[in-house]
Length: 400
Image (cartoon, rainbow, N blue to C red):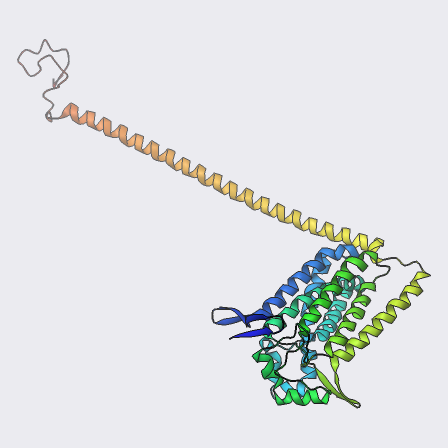
């Protein structure tokens, strides 16, 4: 179903449909497409930058795949926990209805880090260098993924008079729901459904994009210790989420002794404080000590060389296998051609023999045609059969 998303003061209108296209009766949503695009872009960045922090791309690939699995499970679990009473208590089967939405980024980060930690222990590689490239990649993915909210007309904020305020029938209908009104009242907010609202999804897109560029291309080349960029992610994203979440009307909330709170806003504040304090503290602590980045250690170099040699051996074996298969196929082809030529030669011989025999038989038939009693030989010119046989040079039909 197509709806119009309006930015009244800018004079912009967008006709949006949540469904991008249909395959065999299955709707493919723009939200899913943006999620997939976010994953691909983040994944490519992660793999291509891995060796800059001392991790071979093969190890990074394995860690990333498992981290995605942990991230999806964690994001779903986080959302279900804080929406249990409202959505899942009476319909627990909906926990597995991923097509209906319901993923929380904080749960995804927690799940990805936990699974990533397990992978690093199994492969015997450090976690912090992975986080230094993994979390900026995640930040880029978060920026791209916010455009899924644009197509769904969700993740918007309270009323605003700013030029970029937006509205739509979907937004109006949501803000008119009694449960939404009651929740906003508990948070001390009153929203007019007929007034434009903050496009908070766009705010977070811009914030995350700027954060990615700063962390990836300003601070990463100047890292002083492993884990520094990861702390920068916590501080940057936490700060932005703390303010942006305060504007939203669809926050995950929970009841605390002092009242209703937005979970992501409080968690964002905690991450910002933790990340900032850790960055400042480690800056002064490690300033007095000489810290060696993992990428400069012999262990990292040996691991990378080992993985490269391992991959080269695999390629060599594959090449050998391919060459063997090609040689076998070539030999089979040559044998087949040789057999075909041999058969053709035999056939030619048979045909030649048949032709020769046919010619001999023809000569024989011609020689004795009409002379079944052996009385006359056409080749004899001596008049055999006459009374005077003395002139005959041959013994045509003679008794002697």
